Length: 227
Image (cartoon, rainbow, N blue to C red):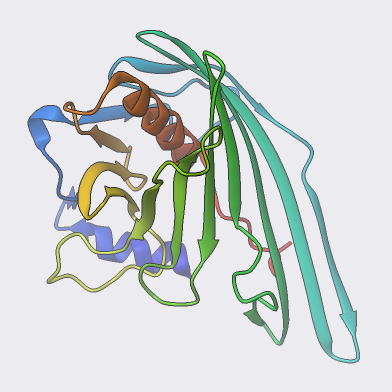
């Protein structure tokens, strides 16, 4: 049902609506939609060298009318940029409890929905994304330097509206990366995908955001109550 509602929100006549971003500086994504794990994705100067999906573990059990479900999935990729490759290792999970198809997160967002580690030229970073329990943004987190705990992180939050006047989509249409109140990147995961990264950022930060963008483009939020 979520996917049907998102399609209705995205479709305008015969064209697909798109998130607002600087058109002349944004990159179209190839290979992300429909997603096939063995097919590379690319945008601008970045392209995946390898994409591997690990073993998916899922279970759904019932006890006195109450159902409990959990799913865990790992995936790994290597993103080649202008100055070498970034290794990306991600773990995504979902844990729900409910009855008659109605589910809640018993951890109330305490466990991250997506956790990714990045390594490039001996520099490490981590992305943590969690559920908020709200319609929008339904997911928030940060991207930070794993080698310096005092370094400020970048806020990442899901985007649900084409424009402020549109109704919010129940499923994220993309993600916004914010640095101290200023948007520095937008990742559109709907349609075929697009990525904009502020060209004024330094190379290290641009490469880090590009790797996080690739991880978000490949990520599909697991639904434990479905399996």
